[in-house]
Image (cartoon, rainbow, N blue to C red; front, side, top):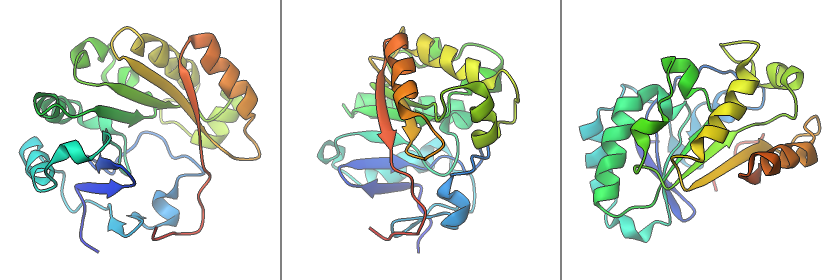
Length: 205
């Protein structure tokens, strides 16, 4: 398998910026699937620069054939904030629809509100909620920042509404997660909600 900075899946093209993440979710397939994803090797041998990402995107041209260009690999995209901004700016100049899939820790990572910096660069953002309360979240997601992270994720999603047109909370369909309550939390925040499938056995397709 070739190492993948960008990789297609269904109608979208995904950008794999980093393998690092400040959470270690119990349901994450990164370890179970050994950094593979449906025929792609997402284990990065080196951290790609903005120029390398843009070159990889150019090789997938024309970008208009993809519904969305999504920052999402086996790591947290906002850990590469400056690279993300540079690439997103290039994508918007090329009239792409841009989304970020995130765990919602960006403001904890940088100890500031980073959202004004990405205004106009994203069309959509998906924030992983994954639990209906803090206690369950801590057990399932094991965040680096510990107690208080769950509320920080909710606050981040709420603030996203000021800067990004489409905001969605997501949760994995696991027996321990009350998806109805997660949906209710999203509705109370005034954002969308999407259920993600629980994946276990490796699938090439």
